[in-house]
Image 1 (cartoon, protein in one colour):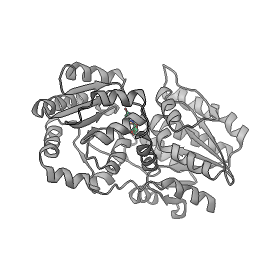
Image 2 (cartoon, rainbow, N blue to C red):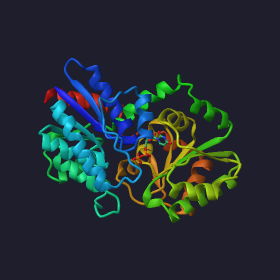
Image 3 (cartoon, protein in one colour):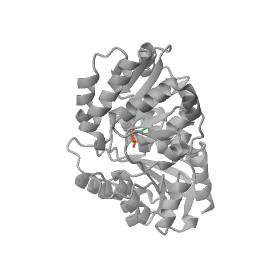
Image 4 (tube, helix red, strand yellow):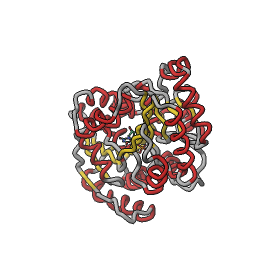
Amino acid sequence: KKNLIIFGTRPEAIKMAPLVKEFNKNNLEFETRICVTAQHREMLDQVLSFFEIKPDYDLDLMKSDQNLYSLTSDIITGLKFVLEDFKPDYVYVHGDTTTTMAASIAAFYSGSKICHVEAGLRTHNKRSPFPEEINRQLTSRMADFHFAPTTASQDNLLVENIKPENIIVTGNTVIDALLESVQKVDHVENEEIKFLKSIVDSSNKVILVTGHRRENHGQGFINICGALKEIAIQHPEVQIIYPVHLNPNVKGPVYGILSNISNIKLIDPLAYPAFVWLMKQSYLIITDSGGVQEEAPSLGKPVLVMRDTTERPEAVEAGTVILVGTDKDKIVLEANKLLMNIEHYQHMSALHNPYGDGKACQRIVEFIRRN
Ligand code: UDP
């Protein structure tokens, strides 16, 4: 059977890397090729290098004046050649990016079976200014097989009349990637990890912060920074380490408000191995990232999520994350509870991760083998 795995951004690459590995372990049964659209370039390449993945096809589509119209059409047109060249039986897409949606259209035209990894997440707000929800919904309409990370995502698909036999609950492949990486980073001494070791004071409690979501640009980031400043002032025993996203809408307020506070370190975004190392060292994580809130519970790290709504309600229900929005007082209050109430901290960090056990890719490969 011929597999084509397509992805374009950093989180997709992290979450597809273990699937590439699992198919390659079974290379007598499956011929597997990788195609990257490179919707992100640099951040994607760092992940490829860490997981030692060499794409067979690279559409190299990132442009400085990127927009959704040209990106969508470039992906579909670029994939025509790849699909005609390789003629895959199965095409694998991940999640909710423009790459996911456009690659599904191209795969549909080519007649390949479409396999959607991380299927069934929903906000039900397709008119939000961002395309992720409509990308997910359109991909679900086109996909033949739906690899849902949790039973909640399975339920979302059942409500949309997708046949139960085509939905497989696998866990999230991000846990497969994380568990492999946690082992690996103990043996990696790269420049970034050396740098982190030189700035992290292990006698302090480290709070790791990340944030990039467009919905938080503007007043949201101003409030977030206000909260971080207050936490740093109230708790000299805490060290806040914040790899700041390169988007000027994030960098502007963050460096404006948080520079020159002795226990806040603003650093550049980290490649995945260094980021995993830092997650392991941290006491608490404050983030608006989807992937980070899925990963952190497997490392026993409580997470405050700076969003008002989430397409990942499982973690809120399981209690491994707390939604704090961008309300300054709420962020400070919940951080204070976790810093000062040790029982609350221990309870939260011991909770079971609802996103899986690290065997998602084995379940995907097993399902494809049987079909
Ligand atoms: N990540 C990373 N370096 C960073 C911040 C995050 O490698 O400086 C990783 C993180 O471990 C997770 C993924 O990137 O696996 C999440 O990506 P991001 O937050 O950009 O996107 P989202 O998950 O919100 O779609």
